[in-house]
Image (cartoon, rainbow, N blue to C red; front, top):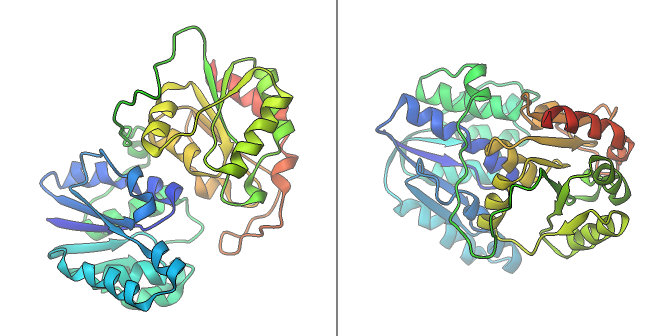
Length: 331
């Protein structure tokens, strides 16, 4: 069976969709799986042995240049990728549904109109499946893959999943010594109300007294990371990292603490202990909890279909609460 997966963006969402790969290969070992993704996120997929081909789509360049010619050129590439038995759109947006529809296939599969935010997208699928939008995103991804391809996955199988992000060795990052446990802090996020305050992060670091590394991905995150370091001398800043180096770094630490963003989802994908902090986004929906991967939510009543970016309730999460859970995870 030849399968195409469409999940164009963003990094965390792609990571949460990739969990299905091992279950597809378990039940259909001879399958070929190709992935269609926005160019700037393709590196998160690299080195995964369950993916045969990664097809990049540069919608960002189209948007930047506001060019219909570039849009036509990007979409026209889809006609030349070969034929598939099934195309599965995990994203449920109009742009992802258009991409899925243009890929030559026997059938195109996606969620029904009640299960996605952009309901028009469902009109472009040959087969639709109903799945509660409020359901945990990992379970949603597994659900649609299993339905489309005719197998079942139990909850315990997700709990005991294999790590599924892979990386190449890099000279920029040397292995850590075994001189103590390492905490990784993820200070940034896609928008401000998902960011935990620097002084509270510093309080967590000081109370845990672990060797601490703070990562950053852009200028704004670098400034936040420097603020945390000012409040806590126990922390050090990581160098600027590419995705390959980020995956490798996270694989070496003992616990990751951060908001609802890509690197904390990388920790889950690599079976690295983590605590993900949620305020304006739904924690139990956006993260899959286990004995070593925990979620702490503010008291906000979050509507997953309509995120309030003016909700800064993540700052109400007390550092002591984070420290207590971290200590329990670390034993």
